[in-house]
Amino acid sequence: MTRSSAERKAIAATTIPADSEVPILRRSTSVMVWLVIFAVLAVVAHLMQPPTRAPGEPVTGTARVIDGDSLEIAGVRVRLHGIDSPEREQDCRDANGRTYSCGRASMRALAAAVAGRSVTCTPTQVDQYNRDVATCTVDDADLGEAMVRGGHALDYARHSRGRYAAAEREARAARRGLWAGTFETPATWRQQNAKR
Image (cartoon, rainbow, N blue to C red; front, side):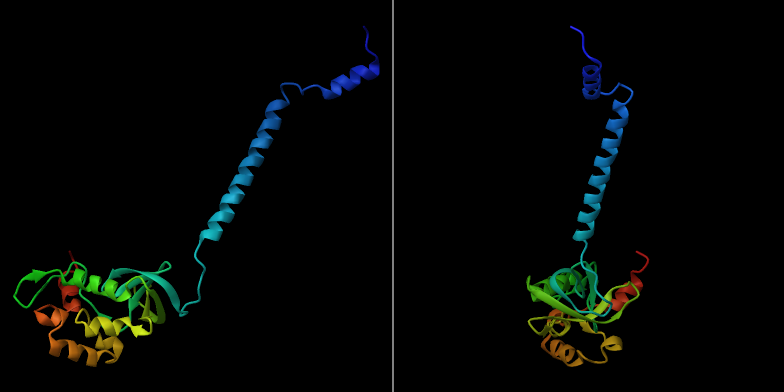
């Protein structure tokens, strides 16, 4: 059976391309698939980034306690304004003269004050470690004041301008927290342990 010229052209048009053409087709399809995958991943990564906020703008959310005077909220590091708490590795002496980790006790006190509730921090400045220094509240209660009043931090008068002086006097008179025993001020401890 002989085929006409038109039939041979129709069959030739529907045949698979020559072997030399297949790798080019596969290569271009593969490149296109990878470009689409890369574009989708870039969009997902962009959408997962926390929203940017203007410097000085309050930040609100669930806080992670870093130490007795520092928090992290939505990826923003915050230092509580006007207070100074013992460093995480700092030890003090209790009323019986026994050594205890007052830095960790201060950290636990801040965690208890936050208690998983929403924290709002209003920045007052940025410190040398590029953290917001802020007044932070939980249910309208000032966390800095709560820490000083509980004896877990000191009024950092140089920065607070005496904002927490009365709370510190009260804690000292009642022998709460740090005031129940003896301790080095956090600033002195940092100076003496800077080269550790």
